[in-house]
Image (cartoon, rainbow, N blue to C red; front, side, top):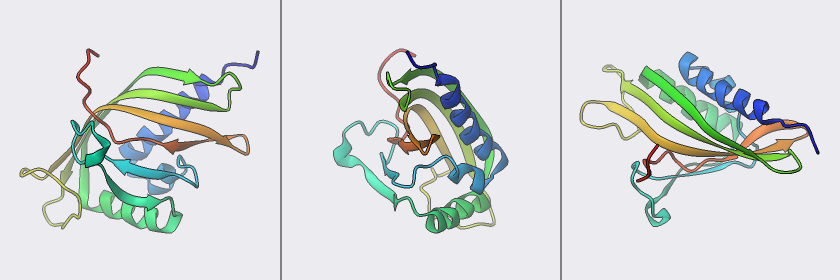
Length: 156
């Protein structure tokens, strides 16, 4: 049996969290698979994919860099709490998913216009459970897909 690589998935989760904490766009983008496409629910209770939207299309480093920089430029991080609930590895140790409870709150900077959908108070709250799906590319882990964070009607 292959050596358990789940600690490497936790390191990916931690790297993504650190990118939010430090507003480090390059670090954030280092997590993503080159073929990543990100469908997103418009709110945390949009369980039906018929409601989902495409925020940024297929991963393109330059385009995603500009949009991520714009987000970090127009928002201040209030808090970023993430708890890994479960990591599941494929038998081959080359694919995995992680279930992560997320409570990340951003506040729109008062002097900045934002293309994102903040609430009336200017807050953008990412709250709920995410399933982050990973695969290896030349031996390095990359996030292949993550549906948007949702608040599932189950006990946590």
